[in-house]
Structures are given as structure tokens and as C-alpha cells.
Amino acid sequence: MAARLVRRCCWRHLGAFLSTPSAVPASLLVPAGKVVMARALPQAPLALFHASSPSSWADGFSVKEQVEESGNPEHKVIGELIETATSPQELFQLSELHELNSNQASLVITQLSRLAAEKKLETESILQDERFQQLIGITDSQISQVWNNTLVNLLKSLYSLGMESSRREMQSVEQEVLWRLRRLTFRQLASLAEFLAAKQGKENKLLNEVIKKLELRWTELEGTRTVVTLMGKVGHISPALMDRLEDKALELAEQFNPDDIRKITLALAYQNRRCVPLLRALSYHLIQKHPELGLNILMDLIFAYGKLNFHQPQVFQKIATDLHPHVATMTPVEVTRCIRSFALLKWLSLPLFEAIAQYTLDNTKQLSVTHLCSIILSFARLNFQPSGSEDFFNMVHEELQGQLDNLEPHLLTDLVWSLCVLQQAKAPYLQRVLAPDFYARIRGDQSLKAQSLRLKLLHINATAKLESPEYRGPFLPAEMLSTAEPAGEKVTFLQSSLREALVGVLGSRDKGRFDVRTIYGWPIGEWVLSPPPWGAAGLVSVEGIEPEGLGVAFYYRILELSGLEGTFQVIESNHQPNTDKTHQ
Image 1 (tube, one colour):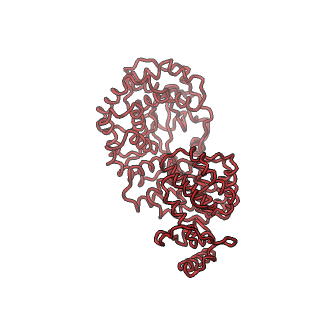
Image 2 (cartoon, one colour):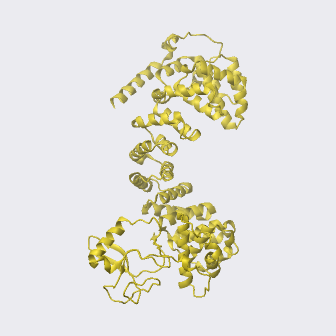
Image 3 (spheres, helix red, strand yellow):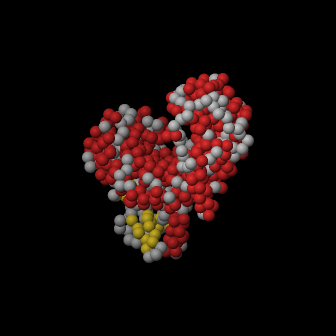
């Protein structure tokens, strides 16, 4: 704090010192060892000169550089000419008419890069030009005299123009930047890190050194823009730096605007960093201070929350409410992205989903089969039935007719499984996925994706047997109906605690069995009682399960264990998948 106060005082006195340049001899404004030389250049009016504030100087230039810039009218004029040039030819002519030093040559190269990017010019012709070779030669011969800010911009410009990294001039600039890292401001380091991360990738030696400096000097981090930029562009390279950025973002959470919040949440989502304190703070300020949010911000926010599986009901309600008026004007891609995120979060907003169902009916011709499948899968995950379900599903069946053979096997399986959940699976769908040639593709495949597909086929087969009396086949063969436990399945802490508690209640492990697998694909997850301590009323018979010594199969599923009250909530279990939903 004391160092910062001293620095501010120095800038204030320096600003007063430079406010009257006429009172200062020109010889004092030129670095030692340089000779003041008169040039036949037009005297530009003072109004055209750019006078930076002392605070901005601290971000870009050293004191020596600012004294030279403020006190040399010739440099100012050349700088104005470079800045106002509108074509590479103007810049090359300027280099021919005036004798440029290394700093001015660097400014010309930087301007060339900017013009090439803005006007989409061919960079190869610029690099091959003899005058450009002269500029890069001047810079290389006096590289130590190039100002810090100009040197950083020079390096970025050479990368943008596509100069080969094997060239000596390029290596000279990179080495000079590497030597000066300790003298660069934090903002310059952040700008350089952002550029190198986008252009060069993680393996760049200079980028790694820059990130190390950022990690060491993170306390100098100021301003929301730098925090947001580093989190989005550089944070994924250095977890240590990202930890510091999250702490700083939490400190500045109140100052972020909606777009900043969008960028931060996206950065966290892409890096799978579920920083709960930061997400809670951003959610709070989003609700309290930003009543109106744009469509793009709403879409990105719900995507980020879904990817991070972060539940914040007030934010979800706000997003759903704000999205509802936009549904009619959204594109099919936006609609599917939106509904997929809400389904992932298991958050059901009835008005929003009714609007999406109506959008699907009104824009059938614009929706592809893939878009339609995404909507059906999302509805099934939330077990949502539109109010006009008959019209909706008639449209679905009509659009899917003749399209099943064109779907990828996993997508087709998910589609039919979802239709089973929604009680809309007809014989053609069941026949397509239960046919021998279909499930033969995954036989013997032990990958996680194949196990998931096999389990869903068991669910579909159960629906075909138990809920579709008019369906006559085909069904899965007996060898597919294995009740073996999937490989690699782990017992959670809650499951193990529940089992220990149940053993205490029953008095012995011999009176029950854990995790019994059925031929329908749904396990009896916690306990099978044999015999039951309660009456036989309401017991559910399940094919494939016969506890020893009993002629009738039955089971109870323990859904909840309350450790405080010592009670269990026991309900009958069926073969429907878990489709818990949250209403608005």
C-alpha cells in the first residue's frame, strides 16, 4: 500500500512537471547520449498531440519513455503520421522519407499488422517487401532501445503477420521480451499471455514464462476486464493462476456486468471448475442488479449452469421467465440448446416447455430430425407431457416415419427409450431396436457406451413385454437378459451407510440381499427382504427374483434414510426410470 501511494505521488509530481514543457530545455527531454537534431518537418498544432494521463503511462510506458515522448515534437509528428496511415504503401513511403529509429520502425510494423488484419491483406507480400526487411533490420539492430509497450506490440504483430519463428530477427524479439518480463507491467503481461495462448498454444516457452510471472504478481491484478480476459483465455493453461483469478473474481463479483458474468461462467464450464462460492456470488448479483438480460446471455448462462450441474432455483426461474418471450423468434439450434440444458439440470418450467412444444408444432418444417430427437429426449428426461400431447406426438410420429434407418444406433436407442418413458413407443420403434441385427452390433463390447446402450435396450424390452400387450415381437434373447452386475460399479457412501443401518434393523445379513438385478434392467438398489417383516399387502411381483424359501417374489425399495429420526420411507418400486422433476 505504501509503495502504491509513493508511486501515485511520483506520477502527480511528474504530471505537474510535464504540464509546462516550454519551461523545460529540450536537451533535458532527450535521453543521455542522444543529440538533438533539427528536422525539416511541419510543426503540428498542439491540439493534435496525444497527451496521455500519468495513470495510463504507468500501464504502458516507463518514466523515461514518457519524458522522451512528451518532449520530442519530431517523434510526435512521426507517431501521428504512422497512426493515421491508411495503407501499407503510406507506411513504406514514410520509412523512405524519414530516418526512423528502432522504436519508430516497430510502430510502423505494428501498424502494418493492424492494417493487414482490418483490410484482410495478403501478409506474404508485406513480408517479402524490401522496405519491410529494412524496417525489421532497423528494429533488430537497436532492439534494446525499443520501448516496453512497443516491444510487446511488435512481437504480437510479427506473429500476426506470419513471420517464421526460425528467423533470427524473430528470435531476437522473443529473447528481448523474455529478458524484460520483470520490467513489464501486469497489464502488458496479461495482454501478451492472452495473445500467446490464442496463437501459440500451451507449449510455447515464452507463454510459460509469462504465466509464471502472472502467478507471482497476481496481487497487482486490478480491474474486471483483466480478470475476465485471463479466466477465459489463459486460465485453462495454469490451474494455479486460475485459483488466484477465482479468488479475485469473488472479490470483484459486485462490479461485473451481465456480459462479464456470462464469460466467467462459460470459462468455469469449459474448464469443469465448479467454484461454488464464486457461482453463488455471481448468481446473487445477477438476480439483484440485472433485471433485463439478452438472449445470448440467457442461453450461455443456462448452458454453463447445466454443464457444471450447479443448481440455483432463483436463477433458473429468472432465465426461464426471461426466455419465454423469446421462444417464438429463436432458431432451432437455440431451442434445442436451451431445452437440453434445462433437462440436464432437471428443472421443469411449465410455461417455457409448453411454449417450446408449441414452437415445435409451428416450425415443423424448419426442424431437422436431430433437433426433434433432442426435444423428445429432453421431454423424457423431465417426464413432461405437453397439454396438447395428442397433436404433438402425432406430428412426431409423422416426422419420424421413414427416418429411423438414418439415425445413428445410439441416438435411435435414446429416441425409442424416451418414447417409452413418454408412453408413446409404438410397434415400429420397438421392432427396430429389438431386432437381432441391431443388438448384435454391441454384443461383446464392454465399453461404457455399449453398457449404457445395452441397459436401455433392457428397459425397452421390459416396456415391450409389460406395457405393450399388442406387441408380438421380436424381443431380446435370453442371453441378453443377464442380471450380472456391470463391471466397475462403485458403492456410494450413502448406499454403504444405508446397508449398515439396515443390517442393524434386521439383525443379520442373512435376512436380505443387496443390489438385486432384474431382467428388466432396473436393480432393486438397496434391499430385498426375505421374508418381509411387514404384511404381504401391496407387494409387487417381479419376474426373475425368487428369494430362498419363498414361493412369491417381492421387494421393497428404500428411497430415503433419515439418520436424525431413525425412520425409513418405504414405497413400492416399479420398472419406470427415475424422472424426478422440479416444477417452477
